[in-house]
Image (tube, rainbow, N blue to C red; front, top):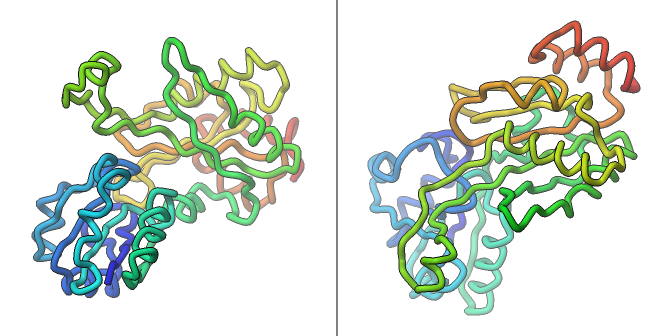
Length: 283
C-alpha cells in the first residue's frame, strides 16, 4: 500500500491520528521536501513518528518515482506531504504511477493553505482562481497569472496568491557543467510578491488592481507565530512579515460586511482601511 499522508501546516503534531497510524505501519517513509516546508526539521519528525524519514527532493519524486514505489505492492510505504496531498500536481502524478503499477493507494488528507487561508477573515466561497507567483529574474518576468486576477476581480472574488519556493536549485553555470552544486533555499516574501505585482500592473496598465487595492499578507499560517497584515498593496510593501512561508490575498471588489469587519482588525492603518473600503468596495 502507498499511503500519501498530509502533514498539515505547522509541526510534527499536525498529522492526523489516521495519518500517524499509517506512518507507523510503513516499512519506508518519504518526506516531500520542495513544494512546501514544515516548521520543524526531519529529526523531530523521526522522533515523533518513531520511523526514519527519507527526504525526497524534486529530482527523486519526478524522475525516480520507481524508488519510492519499489515493493509497495507487498509492504506499506508512506509519502508525506506538507499541507494536503493534493496541494501539488506532482503528488497526483505519483498516485497515477502507483495505480498503473497496480499498487493500492490511500490518501489521508489534512489542512492546507487552500483552506487555512480563511484565517485572514475572508470567506472561502468568495475566492476565485488561485495563482502562483514566481521569482522574477533579469531575463524572465512572467505575468500570465495577471489575467486570472483580473477575471477574479471582475466577478468580485478574492485571489489567493501562492508564493515561490526555491529549494535545491542549481545555477545556470552549475547546471550546464552538470555539477551537483545547489543554491541556498529561497522563499518569496509578501513584499517581493507585491513589488512584482505592482511592476506588472505598471507595464500592463489594465487596472486589474492598483497600488490602492486592498490585500492581505499572511505568514506562517497555522503556526504559533502566524502573522496577518491587511492594507493597500502599497502599504504591504514595507511591512515586516518575518520568516517563511508567506502567502498573499488580493481582496475582490466585493466584501461581505463581516469580512470587512474581520479584515480591518489586521489593518496597517484602520482609518485608511475604512476610507478605502468606502471608496472602492461593494459591501
